[in-house]
Length: 334
Image (cartoon, rainbow, N blue to C red; front, side, top):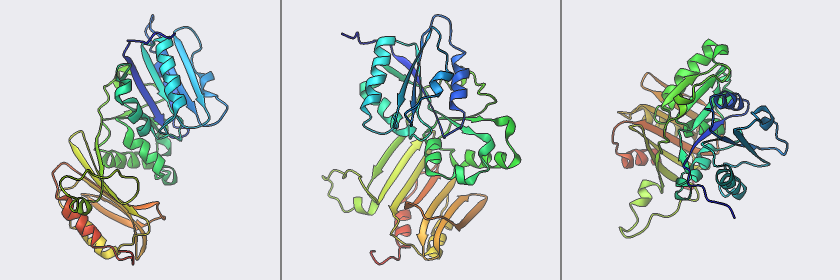
């Protein structure tokens, strides 16, 4: 019979895209273990052959567990729940590091580990995402949805290979800091993974997130109606973090919008910090990337949906904004 651990384990998620430098960072962090403490590492490889585990300390004071084949970030991964529970109960570590696969969605993993079931065992720390600073100029890399999802999940970004960054990389990094101002608290530059543990050993701060039907649909519900569970497009979401509000909308890719009407609506907005979107328009797929200095738009690749996101520090009339966007729709299914 297992003895249930009463230890509240400080737990770090170290995420990052493929080849970003997660394991290198983890190696450097593990070197900072105080004598007399036990640290545990739970690693996830998407394939069936694990390599990274062999790169970590194998001596006393470290407990390494590897999960192969699949992504532990995905909801309902029972093997991860079992492995983590056993690791905590049997080894009773003082600190735990979790390194999900570079193909994972850390926000889903974080959501699982902040459920009430884990709160007595886990003291969740700030989620860290590692990005390769020398690859920031590669837009085919950085514009992928998965890459951006990993950035949005993080409280702390560690920029690896900082010594190899070009001027183009620095420009993109500056743009990232504006794009993700509502999400990320710290940006840390790193060479060879050299980061002090104390700089990332911060409490996890959850994002207040609410995903609901479109506002005009909500208005049609009776006061006694519960909001329906969102399982498909379209929907509206609001996220609040660090004094910022992010409001977004996602619509079916089949919906088409009038480009010039849409451009007018976006250009006429006031009191915002960032506006980003991609739409299926009568001029083709168009991307919008607005900041107060530049209102950039251009042709884009076909997306999985229409979407728009606004970052602000002020309360806004989101119903009016949604109505203006919806009035730009021109497809036959309207």
